[in-house]
Length: 528
Image (tube, rainbow, N blue to C red; front, side, top):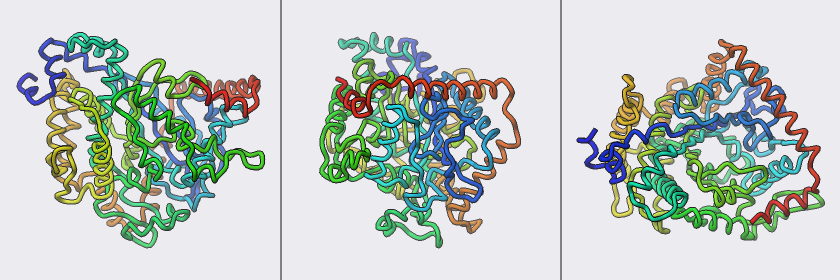
């Protein structure tokens, strides 16, 4: 261990030199995974959220994202990533045991959609909070179209072990309060994830191609792509078009400079965007002929509308604004949002990927993290776009603040920093899962053909299938894999109980509302 830590940040050395490096283990890991439900005929499902899954509003682990057809599975956080993945597997198994004729799309980019009107907006019942969630999604439709909202991904949630914070606070002789120190530590980690996050797109991006139908409601965007076949557009070196400017990006947000240098700066700059009117959205109208089109006409309706690759998170109480939760109770965990669904994995994420991401996030915590300025913000965006569209292009060069650097060289620097962290996380596990994950990604740097994006394009070429056909064929294989096994009785009963409880909870919310919706909304936005 010690011979490796010469080029690691002071923070890692400090822990090693004082014998506390083991405190880096046992951070909590949770996963959120979105999947589009696809009907027997290969198009997006128009059936309501299946009742056997319970209420999408109140179920803790099975809900919907933008669309009624876009399922979202959420695992509790576990110390051992294997347990997280096992839980994700259990949810999949339960869903497939009951899902009649439909399958889950294994790709991030939607197939089987036919313009905006084909994507049903999620419904959450008649309670005020349920209506608010639905109207927020209506607002997204008016602002960005529905098609873009049908894109699916994986969010990797990570929280640093509590004991590590207090030990580092002591060792670094910090003069700030522990709460302040923790917030600063998390924001330092976020800045490094922004600077180096393009690496996630290169290694795990799995959306190099898109169905032409994706652009039915936005045909002007098709011109920037090459044609793979009659039905598919692509870029030959693309890694993650989901994370490019055609995916989770919007023009008015590109100019938003959210402050990641401190928790206060972050909350203030995000709150400002939620309270700043935006002329184009004022034209849409908020309540037209007695019907809500959006929650408000500001740059952001609520915090969730801000599309960022990384979010600081705190668990919000009922009807509490996320920014207030952060302000009151600090950062609880970090959500990394840039993972595409792995088309080749029934769960959408492989063990190896999960091990790598944990080690990468921890490394970002340990590295020095100077404050951001507006130039850094622009470079981060430019690097992400370059890798999304051209990541596998031989000799691709990125912008590091002080110099232009080949992607390959910069990756080597990051992986070298990760090496001792992986060795440490492996501990006495003879399989060395973290170091093995690192070694596998080293190979993908040496040989871009090993990346998921390259494998998808190769697979489409060899089978002469358009992207939609290839993605659906793979999804059917994953469905068969789940349908060939059954969930054990105990887990089945647990999930049936949860579904029942969630439906009762939704009903309770609907019956106990004592405010009109207008008053509820005014009250929600007036929280200080």
